[in-house]
Image (tube, rainbow, N blue to C red; front, side, top):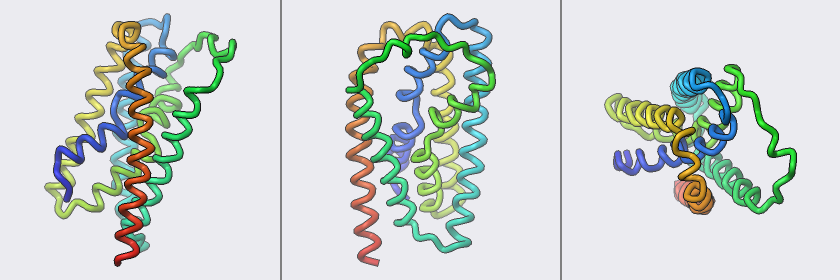
Length: 202
């Protein structure tokens, strides 16, 4: 079982608020505070339930069908690599005029695109399943659950204050987004490399 702080850092990168602030601010601009609050709360509830279900079902499938953990790790690494690389490429795409259209948010958007795939990403689900599968006992699994719940609480708080802080953080978040994108590309390659070594040595 990896160090608990390492698990927190890994899951925070996969499921944390950095990738949520920009889309949520754009989605809820000029929106009533009550709608923003409902969107944030509902999306976090859906995300938390989805992660719990995915973790339980994913680990059960791994045991039932005998899927090796390195294979899951490689799959998660590939998804993380491709998504992060795509995000980096999109930063260099020209801004089109129609992107300035104002979106009128509805509560149904709490599921899509907020909960899925903004908060709960495919590689985030893979990371949760992977870490749970590696957890040796129920105590370790509960620790992972507490970490995930803590990250969801942080996400909720950030979404509730986004409209007040986004204008001050916009430039910083753009720079941070580029840095995190590169880190995620490298992390995806590192995961693939490490799991290939385990698979080849087994």
